[in-house]
Length: 380
View 1 (cartoon, rainbow, N blue to C red):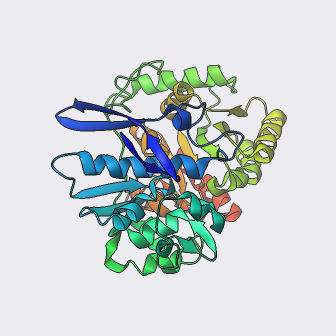
View 2 (cartoon, rainbow, N blue to C red; view 1 turned 30 degrees about the horizontal axis):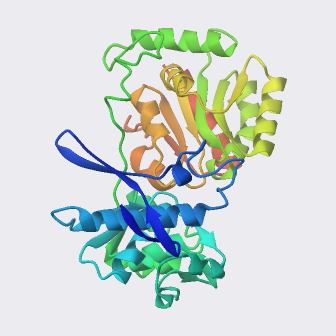
């Protein structure tokens, strides 16, 4: 397939297939996408990110023109596909566009002169289009130029219209009015199934949790935790960044240890936070263990072996790990934001109802939540 891209003719290989009766189309361009990482290396984007994703957006639109019958709707996800609505409008195509926001913090901002690298008319670089405070902003442009916008939870859809969570785009989002909505994410319960998960020491299911006790003991041994001391294990599988509230663990974690709790953390991200966490673990080697990086097998064993799952996020569009944890029988202890509010029902001791513990994502709130969790553990 050939098409204009970046001021020259672009060429991409197109793959077609079917799965479950659904037609699938793939775009191949090794020059841009056969790389070690998807978005970038060393914590940043690849330097040619605009060129890469401009090519991808234009290729997707050209493919939509080719498919018969012509698609009625193109759904695009995050800023990386954010130029699709602009190309649909510029080319006068009949299909509608739906833009889905997974995380508003990542916006695809570039210098204004980079607009010339795109194959779009100058009139689209304006406040009603791709321009935002003098910069080229792909996420903002997708919001304004798409027919409708949705995000991954109802609470996050409300939050991002407020200054505190709007990442500078709250007023732009408010202007979408009824065309902005939140649809709650979900998980594949066959993929995340403790009854068949080969990574677990022993499989288990609702109504028969004997295997989970074996998973708990196995996690203690694998992590080198103080064994079977009658105190709970708290688990975390997370990006190690401030947004995820990891810094809150540094203060509250010490108090948890003093009360006999154990903590297992798996994640990677901010080097300074990683260093602080590993330093905390070094002071409490039998009670706190930190593994940097990501290992899906270990993540599954943490879900299946911890008693409480910590997710002290300051912002969370939806979150999936709290749902994985609940699926595997761990009680989530979460910041009361975004999709965490929508997926975790706060425990009400009077009604004996709830699926976890929610708290304001501050150090005080975190300490209170850990105290509630430990009190719940000690309640027969």
